[in-house]
Amino acid sequence: MSSGTPRRLEPQALGDHVDRLYRAAWALCGDPHDAEDLVQETYARVLARPRFLRGSDDLGYLLRALRNVHLGRLRRLGRRVAEVSLDAAAPAGMESAAEDVRMPEYALDVAELFRAIAALPADAAHAVVAVDVVGLSYAEAASLLRIKEATLTTRLHRARRRVARSLETEEARL
Image 1 (cartoon, rainbow, N blue to C red):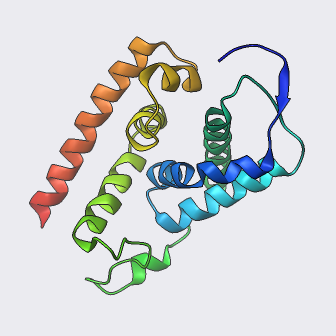
Image 2: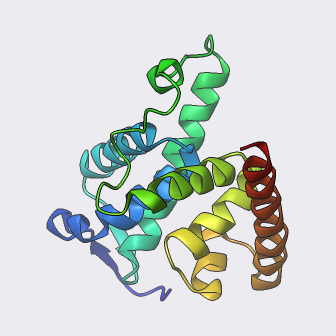
């Protein structure tokens, strides 16, 4: 990221990043409905007032904003009575409406994967989301998370192992 003169964040360009932000939000939340709400809240906050950025990294800025909104929501939820998801009350075998109808054999796998990522500690989840879900390079992700690249590599390695173990455990239960 360069530290040149500040430039205004253009609202019309933000739509280019919705898909990547949604995937990142889903992986952070573990639930597609909460992810939609998180992305919407992030965009509402970003668009509420003019934003000025140094450099040309709109996606990095939006991911930081998404992460901050997510952490704020977690803090607020920690002070409230636990909510019960409507999906939890659905009969067994009923798939979520958010699952991909074009490739249903992968939809459950993605949902399980994102739930496993969401169950990780925050630092590990943020690393996995930045690199594996959003597709940032290690250097970009380290810069976004404000950590060293070596730290990112270690977090990714450990987080990926935990996700793999979680998915293996889930598969063994079936």
